[in-house]
Every structure is written in C-alpha cells, then in structure tokens.
Length: 138
Image (cartoon, rainbow, N blue to C red):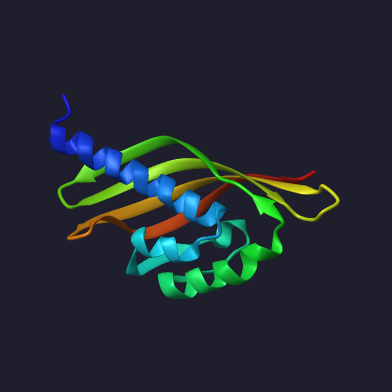
C-alpha cells in the first residue's frame, strides 16, 4: 500500500511531466525553469536534437521550435520509482509536429527516461533522455 507521502510525490512528479509538455506546447520556454534543475542534463539526440545542460538546451528549443507551425505532446504510461529524495520515470510520448503549412506532419513516438531530485522548491528534473520508438512523415 502506498503511503500518503508516496502518493503525493507521484502526483507531483506526474504534474511536473505535464508541466514540461505544456511549457513546450505553449512555447512558454521560461516555464521550464520550474521543471528542470539549472544543471540538468537533457539528451534529445535520439530524435535529431541536441544534448547538453538545461540552459543551452532551453535556448536551442526557443530557437528551433518556432520553425514548426504547430505541435503537441500526448504523454502516458507514467512509470515512476521513488527512492527517498530522488526518483526515476519512464513515460511514453506521442508528438505530432506540423512541418509546413501544406499539411505535412511528422509523427514522433518516443520514451522520456527521466531522473528527479526533491528540492526546497519541490521536485525538479535532473536528467531527461529521449529514446526513439518511431517517426514518420505523412
């Protein structure tokens, strides 16, 4: 049986994962400051992006994503493991991205493999690595 603390931790981590997707999809990249630690490592290379520390990747996101007319994240299958003040998760993501105004869409399927740390400000992501499932342009 889960304790109230573990239920709360799981819900906070799940909300953090949703907050990431919302920040990206609404193009509010500064909102990511409440998702990641300043020294977080992010690896988007499996899907053709970059890897590096959070400030560099955040800057890259703000430069690259406006080139796509529209995109969205649908996340699910939240698999969260908590160990004291650290946690790990694996979440599946379906991410369609409109490539141009002629209707061409890139369908991306991937896993987010994440690590978290409990901070004075709540849970924050310290590591995010994408693992590719599929992609297809239609």
